[in-house]
Length: 292
Image 1 (cartoon, rainbow, N blue to C red):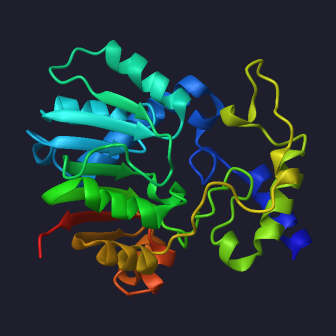
Image 2 (image 1 turned 90 degrees about the vertical axis):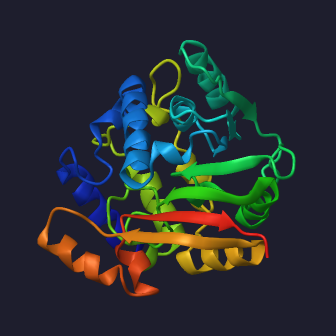
Image 3 (image 1 turned 90 degrees about the horizontal axis):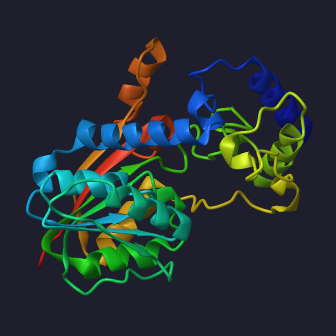
């Protein structure tokens, strides 16, 4: 199976065109990637939520990265905005970007010191934004309970998420551009394939594969025993944890693919429980804390 996975991945890596999975041209340049990421996060928000839902609210941008959604919330008239992330470098970048923006509300950015706790008081937040982050929250049970703790009664969590069983939920599409590879192949097979693809002279490294001098970093895949920074969270498990934490599901939208005959079929499949996660491009949630 390892040889089959490698051969299939190699064929796709060599045959890919810009726009296909793992072949976003912005991933080859840090500045281009940042610009793309800002536009992508804003599009994710405006496609599924309204700025009016943030106006006059105390907003927490959970997993804020460089602060794109925090700044969006400030633009929307939030009463206060707090961005939290585990990565101190991204927090420093967010602070620098925010300092150069004119805004009535200046977001506050905090580097999280504990992956299981949110450093905010009880009942202090009206809206939590969690976009393109949920699959990376390793201590998700504790954090979902923390969402409930910091929310005021009636408070909401807005989520944009790519769940584990999504075709590219493995998050290694730059090296293994095969849909559902993590369903078909073992984790060890995928890691071994990543290691071999990374060493190919034909493989073009992404910006995150380069050091400060622009040289390709050593092959990290040869020392890993599991896919990094993924919690393998499914829709069913997520909803169970939310309900146990006291968060009700106010809205769920399982979005299929777009633009082809196959896409029309996936829109039908996204209506089927359990099956839907395999055929979604993203899942949108609005959770609410209701007093019982």
